[in-house]
Image (tube, rainbow, N blue to C red; front, side, top):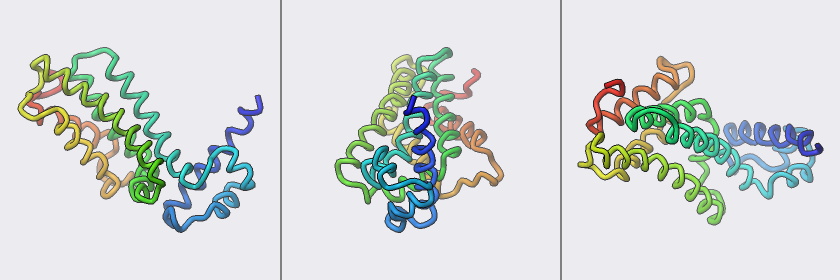
Length: 199
């Protein structure tokens, strides 16, 4: 039962770390400032996180875990491969735009992480990309998608655009995250020669 009471402390630390990293950069925000802003002691922080590196990793990892869960549900769910890929593509854009600060902070600061942490993050992201690529490959094998371009390259090209969202997408802009997601998903299917998702 103690764990349930302590969970808000963890969330507060993550929220304040996210805010301070966004304002001052990863290097510009100290552990002392994070714990003061969260209203906890350093001891409390180190109960949940091993280091500032660990905090930064978790800011991104929690978004990636959520996206991985959603991708698994979509990929294993109902519908044609065309419908499932479209839903998966739209979803990763929508969830990225909904958690844009977390993604921006992470991609801006990833190179500052310890090599072992960077390796862990790359492996986590690779698992997501591989699951996504499996949908593309499934459609290619079934003849639903063109196989002129290797699935790996299609996925790398798509995620290059997704990872770039932080440089131009704004929540108060002309398009919502869901609208951008639909457009990106339509473009992905078009690039695979799959036509409209409802066909």
